[in-house]
Image (cartoon, rainbow, N blue to C red):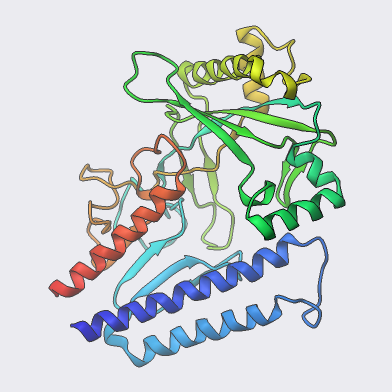
Amino acid sequence: MTTELLMLALSVVLGFVHIIVSAIATTHQYGSKWNLSARDDPMSPLRGIAGRLQRAQHNFLETFPLFAVAVLIADATNRHGAMTIWGSQIYLFARALYLPIYGFGIPVVREMPGVGKNLHDHFNTYLVFRCPQKVTVNDMAMSPALKLKAAVQYAVSRSGHLSNAGIYAGALVRTDPRLEEPDLQINMSGWSAIERLRTGIKPHPFSAFTFSPVHLRPDGRGWVRIKSPDPLAPPAIQFNFLASDYDFQALIYGMRLSRKIAAQPAMKPFVAEEVLPGPQVESEADMIEEIRVRGVSNLHPVGTCRMGREVDAVVDPRLRVHGIEGLRVADASVMPQVPGGNTNAPSIMIGEKCAAMILEDAKAA
């Protein structure tokens, strides 16, 4: 049994090394504004290593089929597909959305109405304040000299703008004192954006920062469904954001609280004016319209493969899909409700717990 566990661990390690190397190579490839040929691309060796790692893992699993598992993941080197490893069990992870397949001529192994339902996410709006001091990430983005300075600062002391994700402070608050736990998160970002593009964030051409109220307990529940039998076709996604008055009122509270924070004496040296939405947006009706126009997903989708014992639950407490032998799901989709905070750490925990349960089951087999 020890040998089996070692073989399983080696397979998993090979897979994760492949993912990391692929991700580094792809991030460089799509994050650069230059289109490099394979000959000139400095990440080309990494992509070659990633390919060899993937082949090595496939060969390993073919050599040791007794210990093989199948893993379906979002493959960083193929944005439209997934990597498949053959074997006796399947684990689905690194995704947050799972889709039903009814009505497209796809054979149904087990009818599970809960797949693709219960989709929800944090929702946020934002307020932008112009800063009279050139201390924001916007300033660094506009200045080659400041970029160089930030790079040196990070290299020497691991400090400065490049040492974090650009969110420098935050608050967890209750929009109603009767609530047992916070339902609102306010993020203070050292930058501001004109718009969010697929290629990244386009900052304002002036020094500014952002307060972003994030609703942590949304009422809205949506769904995700396939639109064709083609597995590479984009799905239909309906979040149903802002489904209730509470969804609006929580964000309105957050906008007003953000303005109070920006008006504190300690903030006076850093606030020249409110740029967005602007002081003219004051009434509840104006704020509701502002939220509708400028509100965005916080990119924390969960729930489409939720865990539980109810009829519409998809996985059990050990992350096994109900009624399908040898199939587990281990990612944010199993969360019955989005956490009252970011989903990264809980998703890592789910993966760690799934790995522990897989090893427990292997020992007991």
